[in-house]
Length: 314
Image: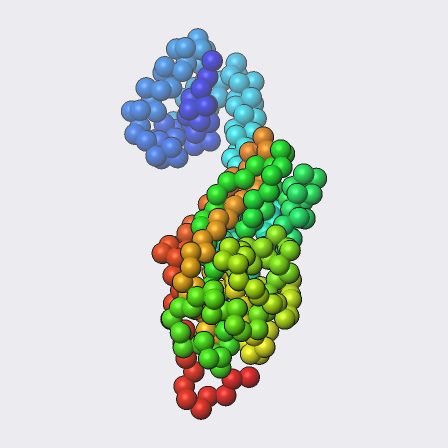
């Protein structure tokens, strides 16, 4: 049986017409090619080449062999090209989902890393409420969903992403804006803007008050953290958001303040149980986890950037 390496040597001699030319094509020494050809012909029991006018030409009895070698070589080239396309992500679409809190900042950072690695990969990103993620995975609309909450479902598998924490955000014009930290008891003294408290994600925000039996009143409710932040920027109230949503908030308009109580929570990536993520999806998950862990470790926020005196805040 001929090995692929031997087929490569035979074809190199056939294409170049000489041992020296084959050696150059293969990037090896002439004696190495010469020894290999003698071994191949001895093993096969036939002469593959005859010397004519100083060149190596296929013998009549070996012409069928060379036809097959060309076919094998073409198939190997086709295989290599297919692998190369796969490595670039060509003709592949990666479908992933995310809850809004992770889609605002963390997802774009991870997607940028995926695009740098797989330049030709197509991506389809869907923003989902937590309760929508089950159908998204089970009906095969996408491979995985980045989630801020873990559900109990026999057909859904969850893997940890990173731990997060909550922060308080206030307008740069708000009295709390100059504070480095604030307690939950202090937060409830101010009008609150937030996610619906009965929403799975809203419960994460509201737990800081429920755990301490603190009455609170959400005067304006909104579905997305980005909307909450925009309302806070208008100085309509303050809010409690997760550090992942707050990561890229404009610090000239909003102050991000640490909460003194322990507000740690876990995030997850969900996929269909019993399945293996594609290499593209796994790379995305790895990059998302890395981006989130960098942001959340240590679980602190930068000091707010205060506007200069007299500055006008829109």
